Length: 269
Ligand code: 13P
Image 1 (cartoon, rainbow, N blue to C red):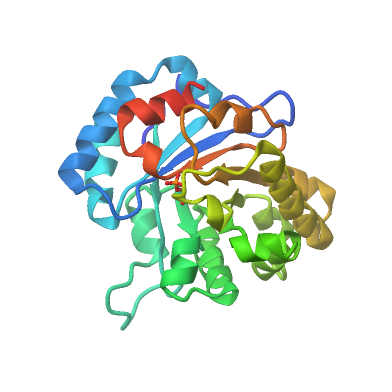
Image 2: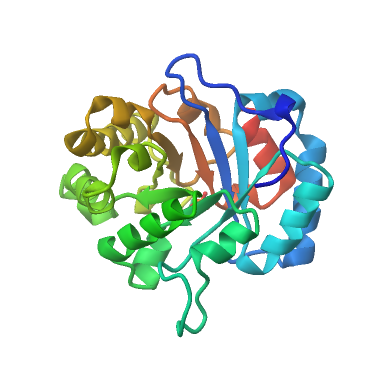
């Protein structure tokens, strides 16, 4: 984990006791030099109060993780380091894959697991996602587990059942004390990269569906401990209305996290 000055720790949201987390998922963008420049600009434009409002994580491509780790530690920048994916096996003949223990050694704190692009473009099933979540938790990192329905599922009124199946696969047979550490991201597929965000009420519906699926297995206290982000076409104009919802504990931002200006305005929303 990056060196975090004690003064820069996010304060719990007084409405629910959970700390907000605002994450930038850079996807397959920015080489390591561009990544360094973005994090420097971001830290320069953020105020101390922003770090109190929410924990901030950045999720560069694997090739930039080491550079960003060094930057965060050397300059004592209180931004958390995140990855976008990992494999569930520890090591072995898995050409092209990166294990959770490799990420842990780089000071990674958060790992996005089961992003819809990975589910749809790279065939990740609920079962694979569950194995990855366990691999991340086993290394004492926090998975950001993405769930969400497609437009046709939404039109078929399947949103709740899709979310429940995605959450069930992850939390069934998991110890409650591990489950409560999970961050979920409700990212409706139709809102990702489309410029058409969900309505805040949709985001709350998704967050409630996630928590009721968790509660079914582990009870209300665990469900009320898990944090739920919203993601999908978040920008500086709509960020506040999501953050205003007590059920929403932060944002998972794609395109608008790629410039310091846009990501800063979202955090300061
Ligand atoms: P956009 O913010 O670009 O819609 O991407 C959302 C996302 O997929 C974050 O993980």
